[in-house]
Length: 95
Image (tube, rainbow, N blue to C red; front, side):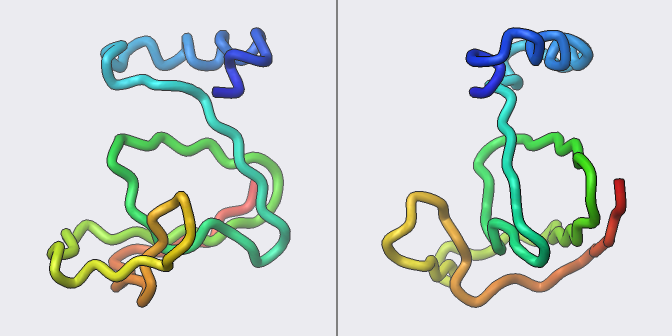
């Protein structure tokens, strides 16, 4: 919800007005130190990523994880997959 705190960022969200309003929630900013990241997780919503400066490794899977196979790291607010996932695509990008 950083756009609620930094009004100039509403202008950035405005550049995506081709997406229906009901599919846009907010603008989120995250930071990771070198080699760091959130880890393998699931999002229950659409995500559009813009990478800032630096190098970042991205990996995705298109496959659904059957509910009986979902194992989560306990004690976290975010749903981090315990055993990772089978990467179907992977990139290392530099901005």
